[in-house]
Image (cartoon, rainbow, N blue to C red; front, side, top):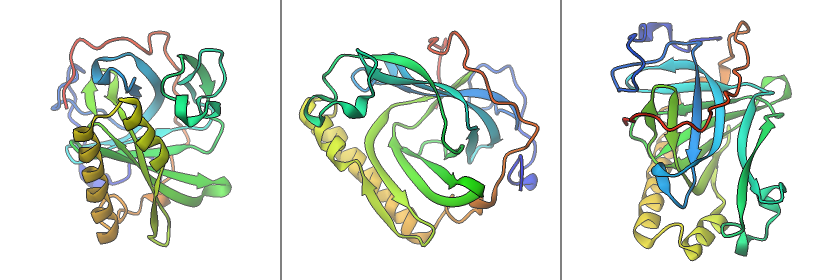
Length: 239
């Protein structure tokens, strides 16, 4: 399978690209998948930006492809060193900035259902050997004319082809609470979202049951460029 995943899903509706929910992107369109700084939520500055190509956009699912070699924006420490090199105790308080870098690994397919407090990413090894799903717990994405924005919730889940799973980054999730980036109420909501995701995994519901590991990108797609105004503030957003 290449390009659009389900031909029977019907064409996307065309609109004025004003970011409203009744405007759906068409396969092959290039948009931005962004995350905003944890300290300020969805009103804060963008610190992760990834240009992606739309695979499918319906009322039930947004699927996008981040190609190998895509130029992205990521957070780094003020001296330019990787964030993960900072000790956990000061990882979220040390001064940061952003830097451009290229995604040198295999491409990533990202799947998100409207309103879900997580997205599901698919990873492959070389030769399209499927590796695993990755459930990224996050704020439900808000749409704008040029893409979607969210806020990462630190805690993640790895899901393997044999349907086993495990929690990831629990240490970072705990540190975010100690640092004050996540209050107890929000932490409970994130844990509840994680448990809801686990229920979907255990039931092998969508998107895990959808055959997405067999999907392949359209070979005619170009790698989307990173625009100069990648951190622009949308006029308005909708969920």
